[in-house]
Length: 405
Image 1 (cartoon, rainbow, N blue to C red):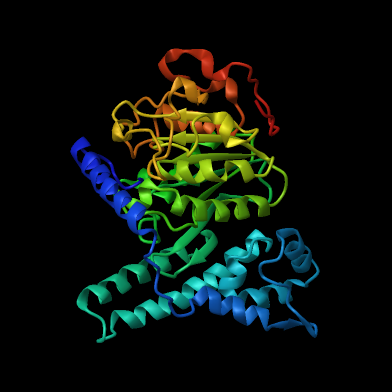
Image 2: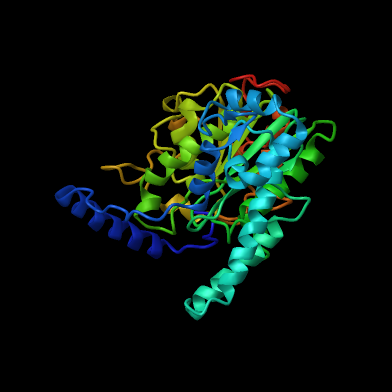
């Protein structure tokens, strides 16, 4: 629900009414709508080519192998061999959990340059409508921006509306890692915005990275803007169910499992992103020390204990965030359960002062961003609890370890 700065209650209730109709249809007819089979995607083609590739006379390892095995494989190669694979199988390597981060950045730059050429050709393809040519132009410009040498694209898939993840900071040397998980209407074209900059994943991550540097200048941090899942489009059936969250959770945990080093990880999950984090929580690796949700419609559980995680669970919501008016319940798969802000949920409730609505939690100068930065750097004594009550820090002390409480 990232893109909704303001959403009147009327719109929410209309959406819920529509969902109720859909629910009745589903309970009487079943889930009968199937997606049409599509042509092989560019990423699938790259992986297929990898599966038939060879190095030193031997087949390359299965691209779906455990990250540790793939890491050992890449470590056994010379630098020219690794670079060659990044160029020959750009999308496969660029999305391969277990490949070195720097190699993935290189591979994705190659893939992005390839997509720039494809979209530039589509801009002048007379078989496309005017709007299709215009869309090709927008995608081409976005790919050009993402392919510049200083950007660190950790994942990239141009299929459909697209998926992407970007790193700020040095992932290999980080002492603390933060992952930003956005909500609905997140795709390649909304990954970065000029207007409402801090409601888009890149702006969120940039703001958090800068704030963490201010909160703890001596701590080496890295922040990942993670939009590597297919998010729901607007307020519809997908945003009211866990379908997109379940597939997103698998992808999120694949990323977390493959992160280099052993630095503690903090999750910052906005809107529907908190649903993704809630579904993923029980399978997250132990190094995930904190899960913070903002503007959450629910986490698919009735209380924090049901997340089955040892991570600290934090929650915040601005007083003007429209999501507070969405009923926090789950019936027949619709809705996302208890409000994480509710006392009975059991999260540590933080101040979000000055966030000004649903899309402002990462805006500089807000309590919400300051709190995120303190959590991300492990400075728990500095967080500001909601309503000026210190209950959210009970039993905590500052630590650079992934301590649990």
